[in-house]
Length: 169
Image 1 (cartoon, rainbow, N blue to C red):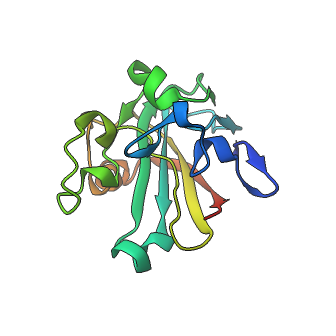
Image 2: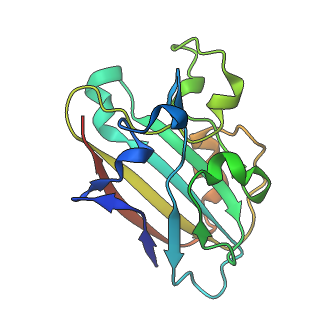
């Protein structure tokens, strides 16, 4: 399995992170999810999923920052366009990102369950995009938590691949 996303000089393309134009962000940060192309899913794949996590956030906020969770994508939909997190909401089930943390007191319920782009505050962070090929759809509701995804996916992962996506501060 291979995953392709847009990069510039080895970094996640600027328009999907901290340097997104004003019309692609709100008070929560960058909103436009980056395109994702998945190649060579196993033939028996029933759905695929992705997680986008920032483990470099631990020293800053005390936990890995969740930027995007999506599952139950059809194996025929291997080219997610830019802004799929907001434009193709019926094509996937999205989980909660870290804006939903009760510690943040963020009341924007729409922002909680969509892509929120990288905005590293202190240095370049390395974002971990993991794509999973699954042997069945997962019985997860919209707004599921990351741990719920891990539990539901256990025993159903046919293949997975990770991509390191640096984003500059």
